[in-house]
Image (cartoon, rainbow, N blue to C red):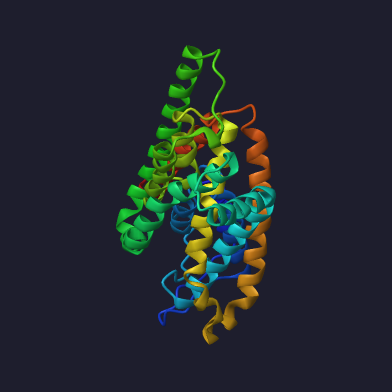
Length: 306
């Protein structure tokens, strides 16, 4: 993995009493990793699990304080997305209010987009609430690290295939104008949003799955990226907000010196990742990320099991 030599500079000893034992350097690096990899189509959870194993980090991710730490990183990532897309979200909030006052769901393109986001969020929200904890406990087991690396390789393969299919569709319909996200049908938006559920498997990227779903639904790369990030904002925020009480428990105060700088790092990384990717997908494709995931997953398998 690219970051493993850096991470290995900050070893942490396991605690027989279940203490978290996370150093400041590790905390900040985890914040940066969350901010970048949550939005880059490379799987944040897959990277965190694999890097922890490859770099021989022994902090206790089952410690209650670690939950507070993760909540803060998610909220910071969601805040960065909200700031970047604030103009869009203002229009969307007004559209929801307009739908209530007019007693009509769709009355213009903005209101349609607002409810497309709801359609794209419902399935991943329900599935995430029901299965996320079970999936995470399963993949916390070191015996299944090879599966996490395998899913990372699969993530690269799916993006590669999505790129190929998109190129073919563009050649067949070169004269047609590509859809904007607002042009999607409600079933199509639901299907694109549902693609995010595959991110329950560590190594499968939430943003990557949604972008592939978007381009296969006829969106341009830029529009697919925009729709994926708009869909991700409530999903990531909800994942954090559901656990907000954990941030205010007395025991969480003991790790404020780790949580605050890590959350700031995650927020800054997420904002600039969003800014970069929105510009990147104006002209470029998923292929470089696909190649990276295949290489990173393969290297992880070699390092872990050689």
